[in-house]
Image 1 (cartoon, rainbow, N blue to C red):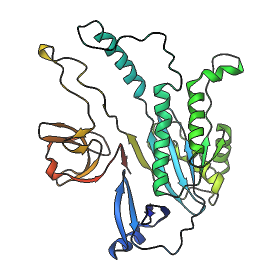
Image 2 (cartoon, one colour; image 1 turned 180 degrees about the vertical axis):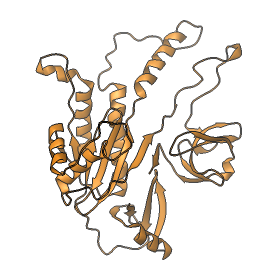
Image 3 (cartoon, one colour; image 1 turned 90 degrees about the vertical axis):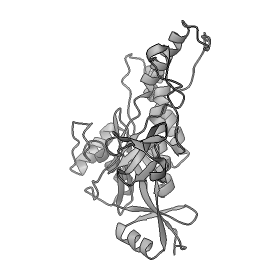
Image 4 (spheres, rainbow, N blue to C red; image 1 turned 120 degrees about the horizontal axis):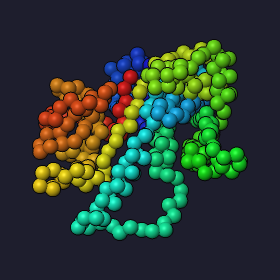
Length: 332
């Protein structure tokens, strides 16, 4: 376990040990803070040097779960086991059905637009790859990351022609992701068989249960990818996992999908709850650290970080101390 460090200007420095971080905080040399679920410290003095080691991120993409490992030659700083964004496709279909239903009612609605060329990436595909970029850009703010190693996944095409892969959303999406990632740092691509050879070289195995919350599910691949670039270890020196789950917000949904008695539809959808941004981490005297959900009258809902289940609907805003803004569940 490491604590992430930034200087007075929020420039990321090399992570430090928890014991040193506690000593700096005790002596007033550093200020602790949370940044989207990650505990960090900000130095109150000018460091003796700002030289950083080569730090790489290994990325193992997946359809349901994904793995990220941040590693240097000396240490493995963090292993992230994340959930992929999978709800966009269903949300787009529901939106389409609701819009079509409104056209048959006496309700103001947008007329159907015909012969439109959407172009670009499908919404569900773009959301999947944007999620990876969000995680990487956040890590870049607290860790001095230089390069990236990504397992280059392939799409299974139905036809026999080589140009069939150009019509795959996965192929188009990953190329867009690579272009965006190259703007952040240098990108290395390894194929799946190369990742397997690296696992075999280190004597590591990957579990067949890809949904299991264990190191051998996805982070074993992200670790060997990062270690391939920076070196330093023959066996993983850190197998602890930190789980990251994206939160789903209903930003533009104006009301409930189904009407209640009398044909009325209750208002629904927002990103604010009585002055708090939904998803933000707060500390409550009874429920501890939780994140903000919806609100009803003068009370707000609190949800557990590990499970996402609602803890209460009756929390007073005055009892909640804001820790940090947040858009995902992050726990160890």
